[in-house]
Amino acid sequence: MLPAYFSLPFTFPFPFTRPMAEKTIFQKIADREIPGDIVYEDDLCLCFRDIAPQAPVHLLLVPRKLIVRIGEADPVDQDLLGHLLTRVRIIAEQEGLAEDGFRVVINNGKNGGEAVPHLHLHLLAGRPLEWPPG
Image (cartoon, rainbow, N blue to C red):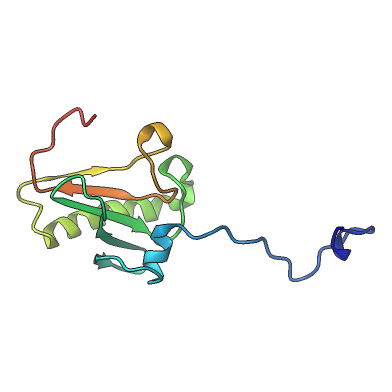
């Protein structure tokens, strides 16, 4: 049986809210619901160590705003995306990675290696990184 507000004439109960999807693991880390080894944070993003590192240094830089993937970013996200890229330098310097070099990777979709549906930048360092990456 449908709830009363689906009967005719059709009206929404107010205030009407959409059910929220479950938070991503990155949102839970940002909200301190689960622990993360956070190395940097500000009002727009946070950076923490990956729990399954693919290099001696493997950090994840995540916007607090949920953007599912880079392929779904909107023009309104331009400033946030620029902010993320400029934070990479700050984090690399803070972690002592700037001199020897590092790699920044953004995965997009299944074939791109995306594992968590929340835009994030991988900051990899601490060893020579081969090309192509695989």
